[in-house]
Image (tube, rainbow, N blue to C red; front, side, top):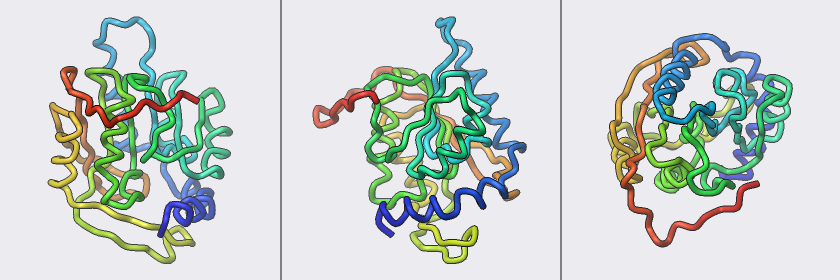
Length: 218
């Protein structure tokens, strides 16, 4: 499935997915751990977090600090998020080309999101996360358990693309993008299954490649 097809697929299943997700659970509680780790910074301001693949917003965005930003490829998902988290800023866009300026966010969350992008583009996604994070910023994301690339027909009453290079390859890609202090934990996902997540910190001394370009903030 190309990106336009994935976008249309998410528009079609957004309401069903939102209805079947449990807004509680241990993976939602990981947000508290993330915010606790950010509260040790010297800034008195609430941390600004980018929630990539925010969907309807109930699972992650609703639990983040006021002023956090939700990004999703699905306009229908963002319509639902506007109802769930009306105070949040919502942006329609691709995680492979984040429409934000450098060093914009204190943290990035990406729950069940990156593996809907072709695995060949995952390094680009992680480089984008690193670019928009401030030095020392934090990342919390789902860690794929295996290597796969498939279209699941009948998923949430529609179809959906899934792609990942494998657990260890994903961890290697995160480190290559400049993430350190990589730690993993297992939690319950929105549909009741156990899923592994990864916490990581952007190396404050990360060297930015000259080919990386700054995107304009929307």
